[in-house]
Length: 407
Ligand code: HEM
Image (tube, rainbow, N blue to C red; front, side, top):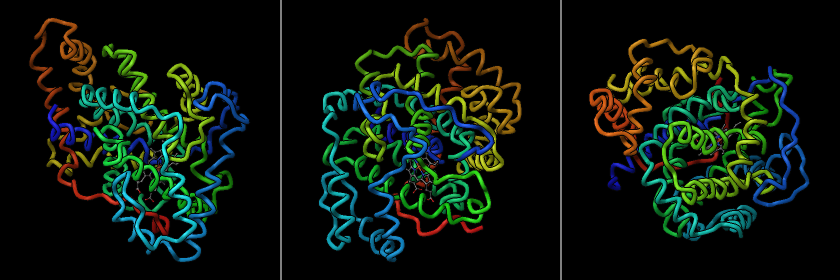
């Protein structure tokens, strides 16, 4: 895929995928006991504390203090110019923030440049599937992760979902880009800015009217919440690729995991919670992601906004029924019903019958062409999905919020 089409794909995929990272919360469901052992993590050991009660002890007090001191507008203005991984931090940042950022921008000692390079190859080869999966599997899944849906809905970004999505999409694009963690890439910057945003949300959201009235809301974006969202991204994507029988060499699969392990670390997730292998990731996801999935009024509204964005952006060509049918196909009937997505007899059955052979033909596993018309339709969909939000492509600046969503 040429660089432009890849960029388009990833912007769209990340875009919708960003949705995956769009935050929600369901107090209705009790969280399972935390039994996942730190021996299965990239750290190999740890205290084993339930990450539900762990947030970001370094960034949280620092950002709370920036907010209280009224330093955030100045910091946002300065950080707008800081875009590349190896770029020196701008002059004029408060000393405590600069110290933290200098430490937090370093890659972990276990980051493996060879694996990160292989991850780039994987992203290039699989960009088409990744775009759609980040978007319609991870992205839509975020709306049935109650804690994430509520956090997004009531935080500042909830007021302008298009803007919110394009910002979150940046992370999906950056992690798959050729130079992601390299000196001239942007992934370290994106992760570190996001870490500051999350710390601000932890300070601000509990002051929102919704939070103050909800007896069962905790400080948002715990380490556990972050792992839940993380599983809605790489773990879900890899499970889908396996279910579709997309052939993936073991080295590429490990490398893709590695790029997300490094991403998790740079977002402030502690090493003792980051799974060391896909088996460990699957086991952790079973414990923390599967049981929390549930509909919420906020998640249903967010899903509706997301499904409408396609037609809004491309004048109806990527219409709500098609996006809805893809969501149903990716996430199943139960989640589609939770999200009040209507059945689309034509699209639903086309996807059910033809998606498997479509993938097989693309992968050279079946002689070409079995059903050229349906395949063309899928390719056309994927192409359009990549164009979604492209019109919105402009320099994206992730900024620390100073307030919640105006109620
Ligand atoms: C902001 C990614 C986990 C809630 C962001 C942003 C990114 C991002 C890139 C910046 C975009 C912006 O400023 O609008 C991720 C990733 C996660 C993760 C990759 C996990 C691996 C979570 C979780 C929650 C959450 C678990 C909530 C439970 C939010 C909120 C914002 C935000 C509320 C700020 C929205 C605003 O007011 O502008 N996230 N996130 N995120 N995230 Fe996350």
